[in-house]
Image (tube, rainbow, N blue to C red):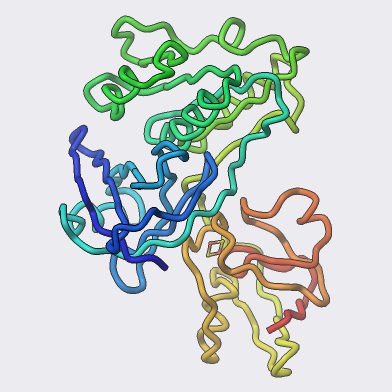
Length: 315
Ligand code: FES
């Protein structure tokens, strides 16, 4: 973790704040790739992930946008309460689970609501490299949409297309004209609420885009702990536990005093990854790729379960 100071807190809409973070020692922050996120410790034991939306070429500060979502698990509400300008906080080094495929001849970036954040960093990067791209920003209405001033003044402002559900002078996203012919080889990136991303992917697939050209970033995911109980054997200690229906492996391990490091607790961040020595996992995460899931030799302990009666873990 790195100590950082909140240099600036800007309330951009009723529910969205934008924070500029600098290293407390004044040094440049660690380099990051467009699409990367950082862990932010909101208070001890409460960590959430936020995409970096600043220019990856500028390591003098990181910028994140935080939507206060009272329906979420409470991290963003706490952050809005506690994170005042000047406060010192702890953040993780950037990790990228949403990389650009720079071999693509064109990139179509589509952000829904606060899902615009990683797209801004991607747009900075692609602009600096002189690579063709378009940035589509879909939101309900102007009044609740952040980053509008920043995007209007960005060096890539001519590549930004706004789509408000309310109309407000903009056209709806239209796959037929906003997505290039898939034969041109473009890749499509979406970030936003799950329903938004699957809608956009559906449009792209219907237009003929192949799955490997579609990329998405999950902000949150439902954890589904249904599906019966199973046993977990810990290879290093020889202990065996039963994971009950409705309980995560992490929670079952905690009952016998085995603490697993977690962060998102939703199968998104990769913190709780563990090697599987025997048994077949029931993968319920968004972190592992389909190929990694098919190998069945790793599992995310915060959300995944077992298809076999028992798993043997390298713990
Ligand atoms: Fe993030 Fe498990 S804690 S994937």
